[in-house]
Image (cartoon, rainbow, N blue to C red; front, side, top):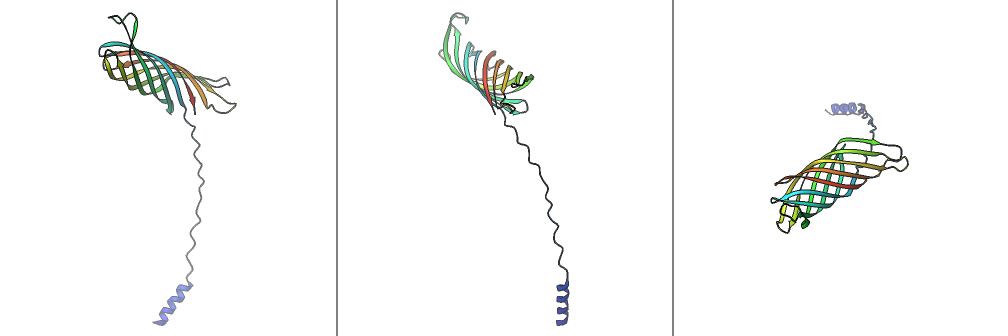
Length: 206
């Protein structure tokens, strides 16, 4: 028995050790190219709009802040806040001298996408001309001396016409720009569908 055990130990001692594991293979991974930062814009707009409040025609002169940001590709998301002065003609038919009946606040959020656009670049910096389709939803809070305070859900759709001028520093990509535009919108509330016009400008950075 002892002889058998000793023979087994001698055989085990003379066994060759297992081969070493194969060397690890290192695969070079190309780093992802850095993403260009998106453009962000902030600006001002003046506007005029007609709307019906509880069956009464009102005209609003607006002054507001607006911002938009490139979401993906050519799609842009925008937001707006407007301070409104609510007016109406003093006559029974809405004509005559204009009287101020109150003030209001309007907020909107929406999306816009180019219908047509083209870029002109003569070396000093590209100029983009565009016609964008836009849709938005929001609400208006109007305080009227005769009609009281009313909240109006609103939906708009229309066309934005404008230009963007990009500033180029030497051969570097543009990091700032200015935008000038006009908007023509149809605006729907629970009482009517009316027309909205606005003109504004924005500053863009990335």
